[in-house]
Amino acid sequence: MQTPLRKEQETLLRGVRPNIVQSIRAFRVHDLQETARILGQHFLYANLAHAQTRQDVLELIATQFTFPAHFGKNFDALYDCMTDPLHKCGPQPGFVVVLDQIPTTPKFDKEVREQLLDVFREAADYWAERKIAFRCFYSFL
Image (cartoon, rainbow, N blue to C red; front, side, top):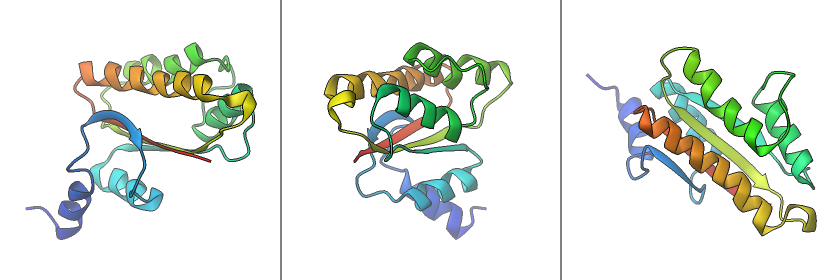
């Protein structure tokens, strides 16, 4: 039997496809974190407010997601860290990812922002093929 809290948390994500990258909109980070906890999924959060460049963004993600020290700090390495090593660790319960306050600076322009989000879209596709939920929410600074 479902507890009322679990049902409430599932309702939070009811209208959200299991493999998607979307704006955080009306969702609150804390509610997403609690939902991930209740559903037994990984919660990955990166606050990117202090980033100015691609390197800054990648370093903050690597630090806040606790990537290994050998992380290559490029978009290919980001994709690799979000997919293959986790898959090789065994069955995964699902992911709720938040990229909070992605910068909108001249050195992190619309094209680079789209490249970043494309990495997470590709990771969502990777996990979809394995029937694992991967929901990524983002906001811009």
